[in-house]
Image 1: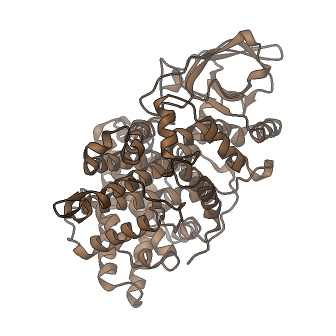
Image 2 (image 1 turned 30 degrees about the vertical axis):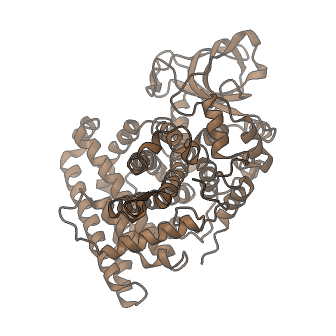
Length: 593
């Protein structure tokens, strides 16, 4: 087995927090439900996370924190989110607010921020406004220059921890005409503001995340000093788009969805293995069992995509404008559908606010609905992908031998989980990929690796043949999309970038990217993640599932593949292991019903 030290931190946190199914634990499903029923902020649970030191992973190691790996951060956030998304967002908001400063702040701002987080203070991100939503270039909050600084005026809406934070990164108009260079970001420290110049807006009632502190702030000529701007004046939009490349991949995309998906499947299995029907259990019903396998396979797909993207922040930083948008669209959308399908298996119990697992499933159903909205909605992310499709097609058509060598080197570090990641360099973040997508463009390299395995007895011949066949279909689908995009041309594609046709192509591209990520993960870790992972039946099911609708005809798969994956689900459930490609031990559970 591989030695994956980057997951040791999250495992330690998991054991510290204990079984969420034990109602006596502070961070239990029951406690979270009780707080949710009262719309109460999870104060005690957040203090528990602080006592362990989670906040230290919001600070880069160069500033006295422990953040060195975004893969490690993903696993920590996922551990929290599997228990309660309200807590994950309430605590993780500090990192969301800190990212723009870590990316472009002055040395003084970074040191100040680090000290505030070490003091266990919360940081917010003031971006959206009630009248403009995701249309941030229509924002009206303004910053007017005066002697020694700026006066901030306006209202920010839907801010996590708005009334609890001690500081926030604030997006404001600095050119009356607006435009891409007409906005800037400011580091606002509340105790330095005149008390009469700002006020917190009332907490907003929400469908899910009922206990989260989601509100806003109103500013009326609030003075901030000349050193308050984050980065250069006029760079606000650019900084937000770069910050989103981190947050969409981690706290606003992969981590909450993967954590919630694990619990949704786990509590459904709790019902399935205990509910007696027709002389057996629900698990014995083939249709229900196959639906559970599909849910598990979807989690594994999202797992591979998310882990690859988290590692790519270090390795292929300049490609994160695309990778982050794919994760932010694909993972929450897939998990939303997964939760809906699992609710059909639970029947009436999915709707109950008590009894089965204290009613945690209905909370997941409500809470997770927000993940596809914040830090850019599904439509916003698909549009961002649309704008890059032409360059992606053009670049792929011109890849030469030397470029393939570079792609191979990149893939090896991204997907070989035992390899040390390089330090993250925020200077490499870019607004556009310029046609690069090592994960999809490396699919030909993956196919060559599969053919090389034909000479080895390590992979069963039937599984290998299915993988080769499916990879050919992936390549054919990529070629087909590339051909259509090339025929459209840049001008036509840009004109159609908001059309249903291009949105469907962007969705298809996300599926092809996810399929490629699954394949790379398997090829680079085939010998180190256990027998189930190594055999590759799960991978065949993943690729087969992703290619439905993209390939005209798919070979039927042996029923044994599904049955063997079903057996793995049962083993992971009984052994309290995370539903993941990673061998991750959860806190011991008594399997409460």
